[in-house]
Length: 294
Image: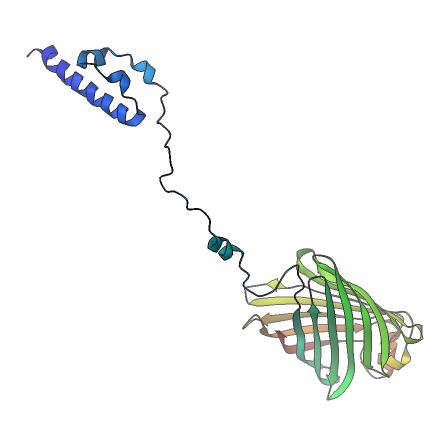
């Protein structure tokens, strides 16, 4: 068999087929018109190196033009909390509503706060107190005007009214409250009372998420006074502290029962007043309560 006579037509056919494929890929047809098989075999293919496909003239999937309905769907307001406007919003938290196993008997303790207003200025309300064996041992209410000085901090000022212990007493209040690093809630409030009495209260708490619903909350409170007040059994300097540890389970975000323990201690002249009344300088209490917000 003559190999040249058989192979040459086959190679020519393959060359023609290859040129057809390249014509479809690169969009070039004119240089190949009028060529026979031998000319295609002798063609210099080096000119085809680096050739790129022709760019498409239009998108395969055209993007439709935006309409007024599209823009309305993106920027439509769906109610809820309004930021940076004149909307009035409110929030109320009963942080502690609990039964305590106190030394003198069963005690009912409450601590709550809330606000109403806008993004920058708000009216804050705080209240706390304790009843032991059906008798009110302490109770107070504060009304404060808060002004935001940063995204996480408010300056507050207003009045505090003590109903118990002793005779009612009114204080002027000025303080700072907000969220420190790592979501640590803090309050620092100074008070100026009747007859030149002064006081400072520092409070803080932190939520440790064990799970999405099981939360451990350490708390701390420190009270200091400027001078002795025998009627209310408070001494000058560091008066008393309370440290607590509460474990709550959020059945719903707005409702969470909890259990915990608190450690209370009096210092200095305050401790002396308690000893005179037959009370201990320090006590540990088991607590059961519920936390709610609206």
